[in-house]
Amino acid sequence: MTDGDNQQKWPALPAALRNIAVTRNSSKYESVSSNYFKEGHPRLVFMAENDEHVSLVVEYAENVQRFVGHQIPFSVRSGGHGITNYSVNDDGIIIDLSQMNQVNILDEAKGLIEVQSGAVWGDVADKISKADLVLSSGDFGDTGVGGLATSGGLGLLVRKQGLTTDRILGATVITADGMKRNVNKEENSDLFWAIRGGSSQVGIVTEFIFQADQVKPAKTGQKVPIGLQKLSYNVSDLSNFLFAWHSWIISATENMSSLLMLTKSDSTSNIISVQATNIWCGEKTNLCEKYFTDALNIAKVEKQDESNLSYHTLVQAPHLPHKGANNVYVKNVLLTKIDDYLLNALHTMLKSSAVMGIEVRAIDGPINQLPPDFDAWSFREATFFVAVWGDATQSSLLNQLFKPIQDHGCGVYGAYSSDTSELETAKSWSRDTRERLQQVVKKYDPKHIINQSRYA
Image 1: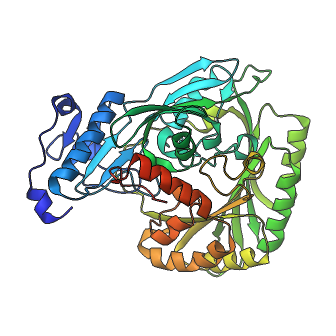
Image 2 (image 1 turned 90 degrees about the horizontal axis):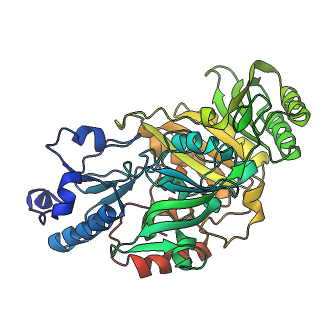
Image 3 (image 1 turned 45 degrees about the horizontal axis):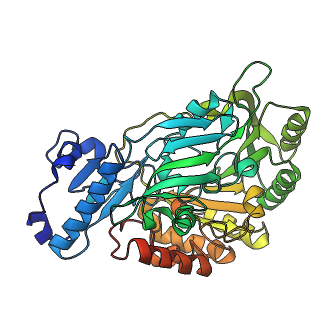
């Protein structure tokens, strides 16, 4: 938006939107203008309470854009935890879905659950665990359902349940013309394909129907039991360690998921600190104990902790306020293997003071068992995920350091990257997926009314 737009009067708000609109002079403005990572300065925030509100806000945004003669930023926010920061903007409109947060169990025996986009995953886990159900979600309980479910979802149970996106059976979508559409395999199937991995570029999803899994309670009565192992290693030979970890995790059944965080112990040492989080889905068995024991032998363990807990405890939502104070920059790549090229690049990155840590996780399993055109998540061949977390003030350096790894991979998880460049977006889908998404966008939002998103 230009300075002229700041002084230009926008069209009057429809009566039905006045009570849900938050302006800059509102006492609520500061609490709803930002997300977890970025401070926003929108002109209007709409706290939508139902599908009708969402439709009216979309229509109003289109009216404003027509009135001023060009696009204005229009963001969609569910949980407000998005690393891309598309959920906030300056001088535009944010539609906030956090009031649309209901979670309902439709069929306990079949594992069918209905979740509104504004719910956060910690609250979803808490609700469905009462019915012995689990759905892999974000690593952090405050992550919003809408943003993650339309983008992918490499959750803590990824080797057991695959992507969150792959668990969507149906959804309600408000498209850029303000129309409410039900989508599934039979109804609006093109839109159904696109919202599963295509993010918000094709419309605003207000509600999902998911397929969850039943997990038998523990003998103690604990709901959705999880075996959790946290290990700290100090590693002098990262190559040997990662190859040994790789051998260990691919030998484990899909009940076991594992992720690592690598950091340099200090600037004068070659020691790499590795924090491992190993998660067993279900009550701990002898097989689980064997895997946990084998993990202790990957390298020398400096600290260990094992616990039994419920999944909803693992991902409980703290409901933190959004102040835009988390100044980090994240880049990632999807890979098919761990090899010497990757390891050399990791060593180089860990020498930089701009790097806070490097995340490595195994994502083999259900992801690899679906065809590449199952939904708009392109990279079904990927078995590993690597992300660098760094200082946002040194983003250019981080891009440069990470380029050799990205060039070595098969793609990028777009929702897990702070880099919003066209080059990064081009890596977020395969060519075939991008072309198909472009056709869906052209059909449902040709004017790019919902414009704060990656566009294929």
